[in-house]
Figure (cartoon, rainbow, N blue to C red):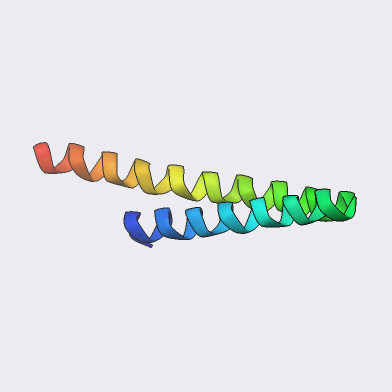
Length: 63
């Protein structure tokens, strides 16, 4: 994936994870909370990957 696609997918995962966590909190469902937290973390990692790709591309473009 390109950096922009990684960032968009990461943000989508992060938002979906937050929604799952909120649903888990509302229903007192620990499993749903855990799945939401994991998905939120995955989204954060995807966004970081996209930012890293941007940084590498920027460094390569400067040389």
